[in-house]
Length: 437
Image (cartoon, rainbow, N blue to C red; front, side, top):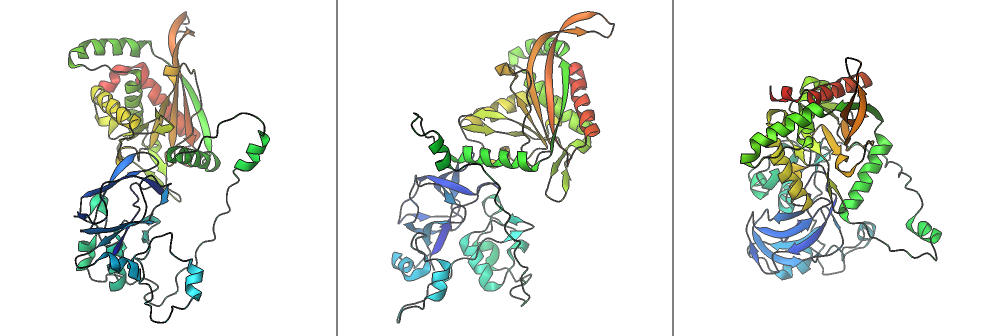
């Protein structure tokens, strides 16, 4: 029967996407792995691959349509021997034409007409995480009583496709199939207060000249995630100042030696390296919050906030403690450049135990950054300024001083632990040669 192509979840956090461009048209034949569309997520424009072979029978969602929820049918694929007439028979219908669930349950089919064939069951979840499977694979699994949580996918990004379930045996019968009653769904959480409505705010400015700016996917995501962060994460803040004169001299010497290779290290490269090594020195800080537990990471994966038009990315430098300063510098330049062009893949901006947000280049002396969940902390870095400092010998001197504020999730990191981590960061920055040891 015709198979619905659903709006895919191209990243673990994606809830909706916009069809930027169809690369196929109705009647085109496609094979598994062919790129059929470009989809805008909240972070980037990504290519969407076909997971089954067939013919594009009908496009249900046109390019440029407003954001479409994940798992909404966007097109219909025909298998060998099927035609467009099979779509009209009820095998796959436009989502706009589908009747409400309650109406469909009450209405009896007209005489002489077929009852519509059931669509693919919804994507199952394992431990709260959605399992990625093609509609055909889910339909076959439902027919054969196969538990998709027991299947390893061979499709793109681990997606379960037809071949994975075609020869599989029912490994585990679901609670519904075994005759046991499924657990009652948890009551929906009360909606968070979000302030006055758009209409109420507009009335406040009635008669004033203003321009209404519609939110794109990235700005909606930034607003939702940061509201969630400030409402649900118990932030506390630790502040330190670090003298940069030794680092600035060391950096100048290194850049002179690396000039022939076209490498120019920034202060931010040293901060990334210092944080990565501090996470190894204080491993209890190398952790994230996971709902009812913590995940303590072994490698130092450090995210760095990059401002882009309409929002920000936090690309992640993985295994930063193992990389040289020049390697970190090159990788950061590459990630930042592609972030500004919205060309990062999800695995390049998802993860990490902590983040760094540096506004020093804008002249900001100090600030408090908001933790990006599920990170355990974020380091806010200010500008290096010339200040009077009392030296260890009691003499007054002028030094370049930089302010840092560590925002900490108190569920993950306690005060003394965060202070120990920040002490290690300062020690590496004030003695930068130790980062090469």
